[in-house]
Length: 501
Image (cartoon, rainbow, N blue to C red; front, side, top):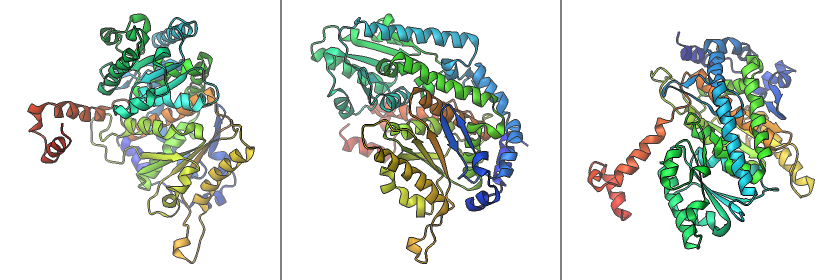
């Protein structure tokens, strides 16, 4: 039986009991389905993972050849067979081929040298940085700076991704062009939205009277020769490996604005936290391997229970950008319709990821979670220690709400009034950071990366290509050519005409 069918057969026939019964039958369930790693507690006990399924996890892992797949990923071997190359983001934190790890370390020192130059005044007075990118080139840096730089940030950082001119206006409104550096982040240095915004940034600098606008530019790219052609001096180009995918790139030179704003030591702590998870996923037995257990839960709800979405709620304002970051990581990686061998994927692929910030989301979407007809596994991410200047009652109430929602989803509340009946038995996972710092954030993001990879292996797909991203780009280029417009559908042609394009 093909490996993907083995996983599908096991998950498709898995025993599913009510959550209340699972707890009643196993007084040690919380201990069995919880774990701690790098200052983070992971509690999967409120999912429908039964002991019988966990017991099959070692065999399922072996059948899917997960240990071999992890070894290829973490040793720098070919992990992306569609494109015939390694996926070398782990090398940025010390796991990979010796050459890749050494090159990553060398490039990291190059980044540090540029930061040292900024701090030493080589660019004159610098008060801010405009970071231009899109996708992983923007989502990762934005998350890092917003999560870790709220109380202590050495430079003002604005991350610009959208091609919409209003996004540009908003990004520069509080920046002084005379004291702002512009970082252009593009893996290929051909990304249309990024280059358009880069040209606008040059105009913004020049119109403000900056004499050497190009001298304020920094390039972050896997294609340094194109950055040179754009007009950026080689000494201000931070390269990274072409084998580092965009959604995995915050560990590389793409993390430059975070390292500049937060301090290089904080960036190294981020890498250290991720490295702890790399070691865990490599060495932990299957039944205790936290990313694998999470991936097993994801597949249980998709394959056995037909859940099409997964919701994540950050019960900490500093993690408000986490759902957006994870949407790209999960859906761009595992939103595939073919297996690693090119055969049709005859089972659900990645869940649709959505979410928000607690407690705001409780007053917006939790009605559906508690009483709607859709099964949506929920994930709560919270932080035990506060980091604000308010009365501790604020943070206490925040955490109580997070834990109460998980309890309420599970227990429900019966009522003779159908409109007031809460069915319960609705699953949730809780991830509790003791504190939010660079190390724990690095570990959290690496956990999600490995969870996504483990799910891909259980599905039998390649999580590292992303050809689905290209079609819309190709059509956008074609639609701008008047000679090709006649080939488009009547609706699209009418919209182009109505918009005056």
